[in-house]
Image 1 (cartoon, rainbow, N blue to C red):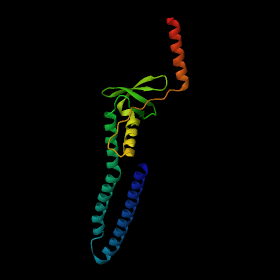
Image 2 (cartoon, one colour; image 1 turned 180 degrees about the horizontal axis):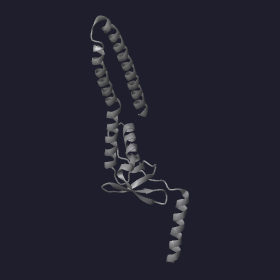
Image 3 (cartoon, rainbow, N blue to C red; image 1 turned 135 degrees about the vertical axis):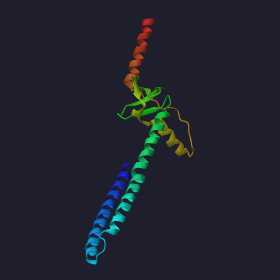
Image 4 (cartoon, rainbow, N blue to C red; image 1 turned 60 degrees about the horizontal axis):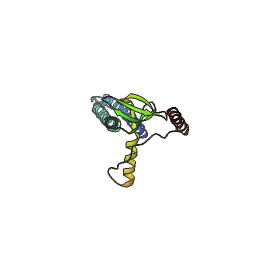
Length: 174
C-alpha cells in the first residue's frame, strides 16, 4: 500500500513540475509576444495556473488523503470491535491475547508465564485473530467464518516449570 502512495506522490510531483514549467514557458512567450503586439502579457497563463493547481489538489486528495482516512477508519473500527480471546499486536510489537475489554483500555495476556498488561486501545495496530478469520473465509469462499480464538503456544520450559509446581503442591498436601 505504501508503494501506491509513493508512486502517486511522485506522479503528482512530476505533474506539478511539468505544469509549472509549462506555465513559466507560456508566461515568457506571452510576455515576449505581448510586448511586440501591444497585447496584455500572460493572460492565458494566469487562467491555466489556478486550474492546474486545483487539478493537482484533487489528485492529491484522491491518491493520498482519502485512502489514509479509509485506513484510519478501518483501524478505529477494529480497535472498537475487539473481543475476549482475540490475538492482537500493539504498535510496539507486543503480542498477546485479549483477557478483558474496557472503555479505552484492554487487558492482554502475554508470553508463556501469562503476564497480564493493560494497554490503551489506540496502541493496538492489528487483530491477528480477525485477520485469520477473514483469510479463512476468503479461502472457503464464504462471507464469514467462525474460527476458534488463537492461543499463545507455551514453551517446553514453561510446561516443565508448571509440572514441577504441581508436583510440589501435591507433595505438600500429602
